[in-house]
Picture (cartoon, one colour):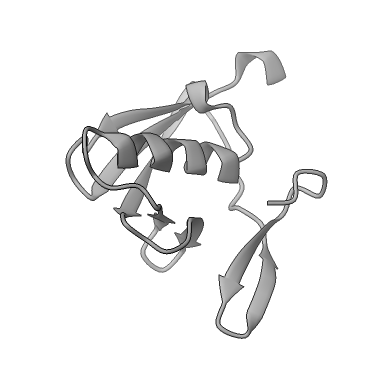
Length: 109
């Protein structure tokens, strides 16, 4: 992830391409997004699938004692350029499909 440019690199079979995360617009105090977590992956990455309206997160960690959920939350926060405390798990604690709530950063309004 390139912090200075606000872009992340997503691997595709032929090399890498630059990808920017979808814009987050908060009309209220929060928004909810769906995430599918794939554990025990050889690489860690985050992709937004517009056709499915879902984020897919691949992580190295195993789904034991919530470690994969914690790592998915950290990866999602990094991908969206937010602090981890603004990304809160709402549902799907033990499921592969999770719902996260993105809180509005009061300091930036």
